[in-house]
Amino acid sequence: MSVQSNVPLKSADDDQIAWVKVSSVFLPLANPISDAKVLTGRQKPMTEIAILVAEIETTDGHRGMGFSYSKRAGGPGQFAHAKEIAPALIGENPSDIAKLWTKLCWAGASVGRSGLSTQAIGAFDVALWDLKAKRANLSLARLLGAHRDSVRCYNTSGGFLHTPLEQLMHNTDMSREKGIGGIKLKVGQPDCAIDLHRVATVRKHLGDDFPLMVDANQQWDRPTAQRMCRRFEEFNLIWIEEPLDCYDAEGHAALAQQFDTPIATGEMLTSVAEHAEFIKLRGADFLMPDAPRVGGITPYLKVAAMAEQAGMMLAPHFAMELHVHLAAAYPTEPWVEHFEWMEPLFNERLETRNGRMLVPTRPGLGLSLSEQVKAWTAQTVEVGSRP
Image (cartoon, rainbow, N blue to C red; front, top):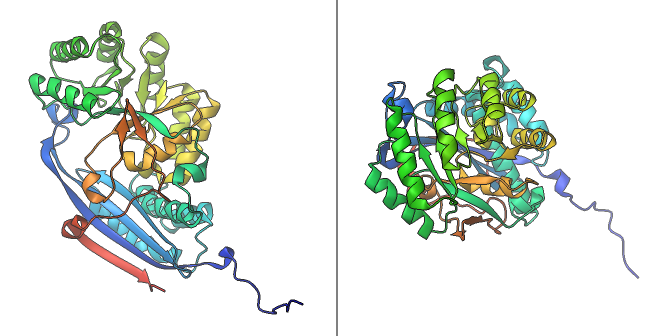
C-alpha cells in the first residue's frame, strides 16, 4: 500500500530567475574591414565588434547564455541600457519569455522600441531561449520545430572591398574547400566599372551555376541602383543586397518588381514594425532579419511568421551561431551567412559540408564561452545572487 505525501511536487513552473550577469566584450578582428560605406567616407574601417553577453541562472540551477552585438559604435550604450534593465528579470519565471521581453521593453520605453534599446534586450531574450531549450534537453532548432538538419550557407568575410582581386579568388577557393555553398561579394565602389570587373571575374572563376551574391551596403541612389541592377542581370546572381538606403522600402520594391535578379535587404532594420513595412510593400525577395538587432528570438519569430505568410524567402544576417537554428525552423529553406568573426568567443565550431551548415544537436544554442572572452571583457555587472 502506497503512502501519499502531503508535500506538493515542485514544478518547473515554480522556477525563478535568481542571477543575471551582463558583460561588455570587445572582440578584435585580425584585419581592418572595409566595405562601400568606408569608401564613401560614411564610416571608418572596422577593427573590432562589441559583443553584449547575458548569462542567466535560475533557482533550480538552469542556465542560459545569449548575446547581441554592435559594429563600430554603440557597444558601451548597449551595455549601459542592459545594466539598467537587468534587475527587472530577477524573480521572474524564465519560461515567460514573451512577457519578459515586453517587461524589458517597457522598462526602457522612453528611449524607444527599436535600435539600441531593443538590441540590449536581445541578449537577454536569446539567453532565455537558450535556457528553455537546455532545460528541455533539445537544440534550439528542435525546440522551435526544425524543418531540416542542415542549411544552405554562403561566405561573406572573404569578399570585402579592401580585398585585392587575386586574394579574392583565393578566398573563394578556400570557401568552397571548406564546404561553403555560396560566395558574396561587396560592391559599391565609386567607380562602377571596378564592381563589374570584380563580379565578372569571380563569376567566370566560379562557373555559371555556383551561387553568387553581391552586396552594395546601401551606397547607391535610385538611378545608380537601376543601372547596376540592369548590368548585374547577366551574372545569374542569387540576389543583389541593399542596393538602396535600408529604409527605402518603396525603392527596393520597385527594383524587386522590375528585375529578374532577386533583391535582398533587412539586416539594418531594428524592429518588427520596420520589417512589416517592407513585407507589406514587397520590398525584398529575400528578407534578411538579424535576431540580435530586432531584439532577440522573440521578435525575430514574429518577423519570420509574417515573411512566411507573404511567401518571402529568408536569409538572416550575420551571427551564424544563432541563425543556423532559426533558419532550420523556417519552412522555406533560407540561406545562412557564414562569418567566422565570432568564432573565438566560443569553444564550439559550426560544421560545413557539401555547401551546407550543419545544425548543432547540442542542447540550446550548443555554445559555451571560451576562456579568451575574459581578456576581451571591458565591463561586467551582476544582479541577484547565484543559487
